[in-house]
Amino acid sequence: MIQESPPPVRREIPHGGLPESTLPFLMDPYGFIPRVCRSKQTDLFETRIQFEKTICMSGTEAAEVFYDTSRFSRANAAPSRIQKTLFGEGGVQGLDGDAHLRRKSMFLELVEPDRVRHLSEIFERHWELMLDDWESRGRLCLYDEMRCLLTRAVCEWAGVPLSEEEEPKLIEDLTSLFADAGSVGPRHWKSRRARRRTERWAGELLQKVRNEALEAPAGSALLAIAQHRDENGKQLDLHVASVELLNVLRPTVAVSVYIAFAAVALNKYPVTRDKLIERREGYDRAFAQEVRRYYPFFPVVAARVSETFEWKGYTFPEGRLVVLDLYGTNHDPKDWDRPDAFLPERFPGASMCPFHFIPQGGGDPLRNHRCPGEGVAIELIQVAARFLTLRLDYTLPSQDLSVDRKRLPALPKSKVILSEVRRSGRF
Ligand code: HEM
Image (cartoon, rainbow, N blue to C red; front, top):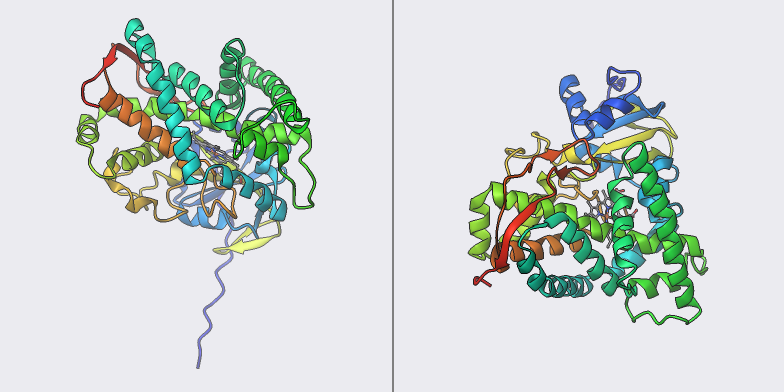
């Protein structure tokens, strides 16, 4: 006789303990969910965030269910203050079903491996061009220099013309879109102004391309987005197209955060630096992966339950907001050996499971909302690791390199000051 397995026992989702968790989350965006999960010995709990009932989840199994597109949708999932700053309204992040697949395929074509290689060559060339200036200054802020170089590189790569006069404001605005969005008060409002200005600027460029008043290079992001047609064959609304162009420029500039952390890691873990200098096969990629795992960036992603379902005996009611803990999943002691140690050697093995290592989201980037720009981030961190170990000599003057984990995204407090910068003979 075939024995049917018993249905899972119905369970109440544990309560997080506080009636409203917005403040504790903002006070400790990377630690809040893992801490509550640990204290309740659970992978999920319920609370309220911004007065809305929310299920918070952490870990590999939670990520697997979160990225099941038949169970979750992204429409109206991100808080309005994030849509008005970081994401923009009408972009790929809030789409579901066929509309999402079609828009996503455009992004994935833009970041095919040869295109990513081209971007990294442009980045290297711009960095190389700065070396005389770096040597003459001797002392500089790495994070600020990277924001500048990455803005130059991504604009050139994306086919976006950028004049010398426009450049400083664009660097500030693209930075503000990711660095001030999650703040409260004046910094958040700065991010909203940056969103309005950059969308206007991007919209004008896209309009010129459509009117043939500006020639965008074949294969460029500017051309692809200007000409993209949705699943009904319609050109993107100009505002939506400007949001999507910024969805390429902004996050590429944000890789400056990872590069700042890469420099901190090189300083803190000299063995890692030595291995990079020895040019061990695959080590630079493993280093970039461990930078993305170890250091905090986006703490969480949000989705809504499309239709009521049961998981492990817990009921997820239709419409409920669910937040997945990215940082905590990358540091979950159930899945990671010595999660708080910086060990590039754990890669490539650790990147095999798409729900286990999720600094830029999980699942399949084609079908899920997983970031299409992971290859870009990995490649640019590798270029930076090579520059910082093989191309340059420098010292780190006394400074506070501790991580400000209340900031979103977190950043080394000093933003990494380099001094006595000069070319090295190792290249
Ligand atoms: C600093 C490096 C980056 C980080 C930390 C990062 C992180 C993320 C995260 C957490 C998501 C959301 C995943 C989800 O909703 O499940 C995402 C989505 C996205 N990222 Fe990135 N990203 C980075 C670089 C890039 C780059 C370089 C590009 C483009 C060239 C890019 C374009 C996008 C787009 C378009 C989405 C939306 C995808 C969708 O909704 O289907 N990102 N990213």
